[in-house]
Length: 277
Image 1 (cartoon, rainbow, N blue to C red):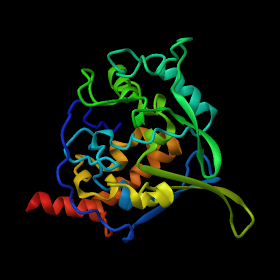
Image 2: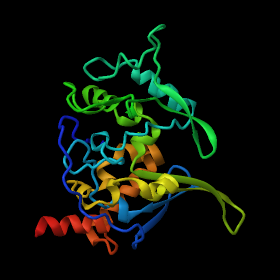
Image 3: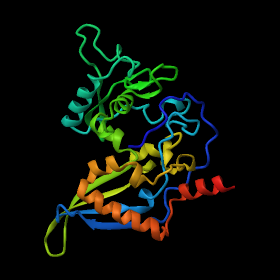
Image 4: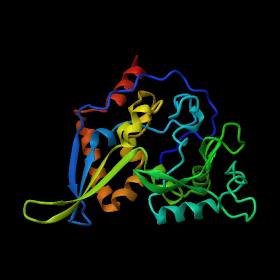
């Protein structure tokens, strides 16, 4: 579980220049030991990078100008499906006032029922998202809150020992890992499910990604982790590809670390150079 700083209320520092989106990457392809019809293509350049969440530190600039304290929570979170919606609602019912600054605002003033979602549009279709309050997600604790700045659901997970995947919206616990899946027909006519695991870069946000004030995966300021992504986000990767596939992937990541990457993530490389200078 990657754990951002949820206690600090620090003003952002001048950011380092972000790396350009196109650079060499190393990939590995493996078959899921538990399912011969499932193939995983994994971006080792990303998984062996030293990215880490820097929310709540002076390194985090936020994605909207003038709202650095929001981190990447300014827009709220689109819900993937009914299961995602129900899981988040169930988790919200276990939040306490110590976890959640906006607990009162998140309940209907008349009925007292949870009021945490709103309708919006995504890719031209109606979609449900977490409700926004004063310009950011209803679950976001603002600077100055005694319980700590950041996601209330994240606070609860740290307090109770729950994994983030059990309480946060899918898009929130997956970021900044990007998983795509497609059924592929091999030359012999066999159908396989191909899962791709890579970096959720600016392009992952669609046309609006280029307009974000700052994005952490391309910033050397966020490539300062003590562990590589494949280790620090092991719980998330297990949820995305399964335990058997993760163990096989982890074996390959360990081996590649020992041999050394040819295509090191440029943001990790720059962060290392800055630390050595």
